[in-house]
Image 1: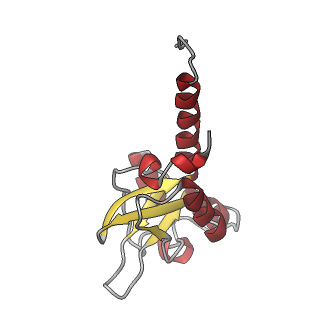
Image 2: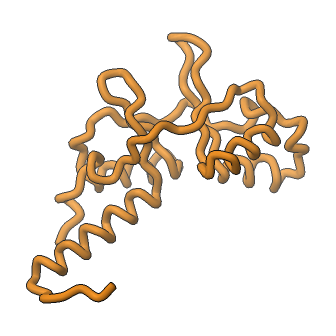
Length: 148
């Protein structure tokens, strides 16, 4: 089995990310993350000439907690990742999705279709997609039963 059969469409999460403004505090962002059970927040652009941003738990840990900054006084705009890495081709082979993550040094990539936010893909999405594809391939090899 090769991962070449998997595409971005196979692994993308199609629900929308919670959002937070760049002027909000990291403390507020942590509350939104915990309330929504989602550790990635989309930071909307301020206009058509601006770029989207993203705040992840990795950003909070590396750029706030590890540096000893006060989460109540630190703004999202000070530690978010911007510009947001985007993919727009849902037919993109999974290896190119993984390559984009590795080359950009990000764990979350936003996916847009026809100019609108479609969803996002994370390192976990890639690993889950690969795992499930491997399990399907194993079943196709002739395993007669699956243990639950």
